[in-house]
Image (cartoon, rainbow, N blue to C red; front, side):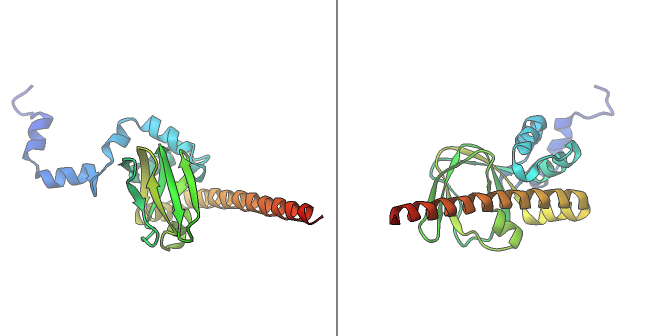
Length: 190
């Protein structure tokens, strides 16, 4: 090494540790590990219907604002009534969701998005979400996503289109379920 050039560790040791840590971590959640293998993480983002059919540049933009949380079995991801200022994407593991009225979903697993409606409508969470197993969850803060979306209108339209498509599919499923229940009740009366 030349005398005028310092090593990377020398430069890092002179920096204020708090500011160095602040660039690599946000609120204690690891971002650096997401960037170690962006192809793997982008591959996982592609499986999430909300981010379907984006180009690599846009996947990279979204990845740049993601944080990773690791939950142990029994850890609470969010509680009913908490502000829905984050959108959660299950990467590994499963979650249990309990709604305010006591209904619950026993297992929600990979590729699912938690908190969509509250996130986009700026409302509170309507359910408590607890880890059924050890989990890895990506999350995005609303302010960061909105900053990216306002700068990239085409991305905004694509995500909204994907969201409407997802909600329409869910509505069709619910309509079919109601129709089947009505048919079953009609047969029972006969």
